Length: 439
Image 1: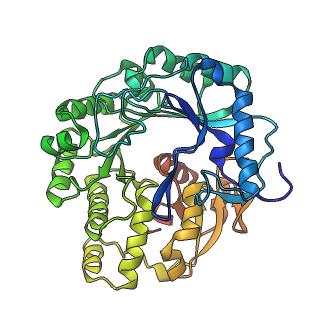
Image 2: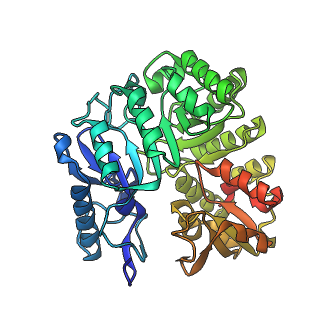
């Protein structure tokens, strides 16, 4: 651990993204002077022998050193960099692996980047690479793994590789980003035993729009497969809606909600996003995002959240609405009971989660600044973060929420439901947990 604070991020230190012909540090995208940056490369890959833990460590250390020498790097301007007592690069400890080792897909979505679409197969043997990283003891015992691509179910020997990864690496969490055009008994098994979650983008309420955005006509098949997964497991399904110029209209959103009812998917988790290529959202798009959020809540979902693409964009526009006393927005939030929280009465809050979302809340939340709401402390289940500080605010262990009466914000996306259940089981009253949409 470095004695002095240095500039870095958890992705540089602890993440590896396995793309078809390169390894990357992250999948974050951000804008600098109107130009999109991100998806920072570790190195290119021509074959299996190009990848080993020592080489990954060396490349990560080089980037870290250049950042802290104020050199221009692909990370320059990234909002996810921050100063902390980061660990030394004596050993590689990977806490997150994203397996996107091919870009083969049976869809062609309008928002998909040309970088990832085109049907590239892997330049290396995925199984061998993961075995080497495991053998070299470069993988954390609490590693998180995600599967994407391309469509992961189209990966060569998917079932065998998935079984190996899940049974041998024993990840703390596994997320599979699948388009659900193909049903998998392997995914079904692990959904039932609670070892994985799957995320599927729908992005439409009608076949016509689905075809326009996703490039295929199998809307019904996708919904049937998701219904079957949820019927079997009754958990672990996240349905994603990426707002684009083709699908944010009220009629389309209403049709989407009706489809969720028709296929018994209302109790799934829902993720609302936006096309990452759009730096700014229109007023209508923001109101549509909020409308979808509240409508899904009314439908009965236990967890609905904006992802890291959409959340900051929405908050920027909401700030303008409030500052300008926008009439249409005031009418909208009144109709949806947006202001049923008395912000002026909240003195302190606890933020559960010391990751990117938690940091964004204290840095960017207009509500906290406007109403002078203070942060009591952070909590995080990661012992490595406990007893550290963010902006001079303590990070404590979760059980200490019971020693305070402050209300709580859950600064998480994929694990919101688990955290909420944990809080309730600890004896925390439901009314203490504030809806994250406000912040």
